[in-house]
Each structure stands twice: as C-alpha cells, then as structure tokens.
Length: 56
Image 1 (tube, one colour):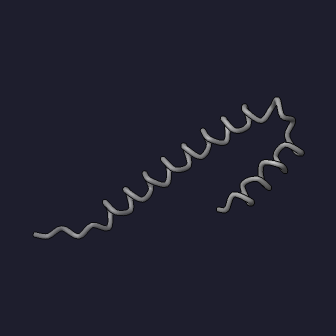
Image 2: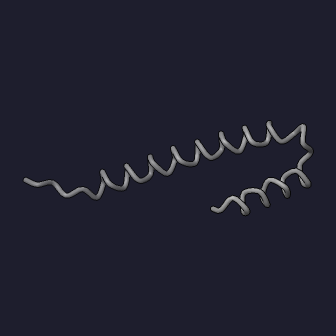
C-alpha cells in the first residue's frame, strides 16, 4: 500500500467518522484484526496438524 493510498483512506475516515471518534474506532479495528489473525493462525495450525502424515 502506497503512502497516497493511506492518506486517501485517512481523509475518507475523517469525513465519515468524527475526528474525536477516530481513536476509539481505530482501537476497535485493531482488536478485531488481532482476533482475526489469531483465529486464522489457529485454523491453519489445526489443518496442518490434522493433515500431517506420520513418518513411521
């Protein structure tokens, strides 16, 4: 993602979301992203462990 794209997203966010609400929205978005990444990692690990072929 280029700097111009990030700036455009920030400008749109400031238009759609009130500036005083932006920190709270960013925090909630960060928490949701963290939970999503943890879930994806758990699913990936589960798939890898169930599809692993024993070397016996």
